Length: 167
Image (cartoon, rainbow, N blue to C red; front, top):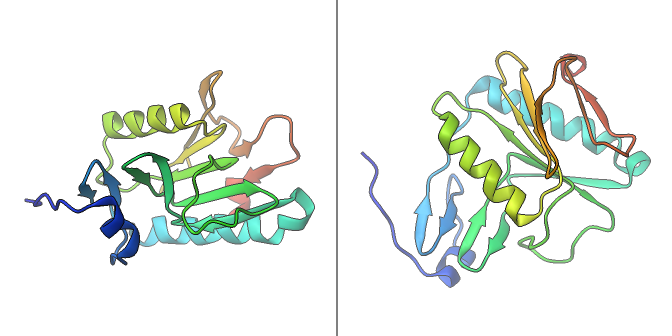
């Protein structure tokens, strides 16, 4: 059973949590910790984007805090931003791609709620990936769909990530 920890926004922003947690209206929100498959996929995606950052004019970050609104912070597993990179320590603008890698504890309603909040924040591309099966969904403001060919894409850009090609 988890306990509710209430802190101020200032305390949240100035504290290092291990592992890091999200924050909403004074409450610390524990994140599901990844297991081997989760960790591997997170590293593989970050490396894939990092190798192509100049080609695609992007930067990639793992577990980077984002201020979604006043008193609300969320943390993607991986995020990709268009260059130039922000000069802020906690990002306040939506990234080009927000990537959530599922953990065994993730529940569909919770994931769907997070996707909804991220779309409201203005994230144009949200990728949700199962690290065991490589099944994936893409969510945009216009639509959501399951990735049938195993290649994650950003419409209107050269960005393509073949999930099976990461192995």
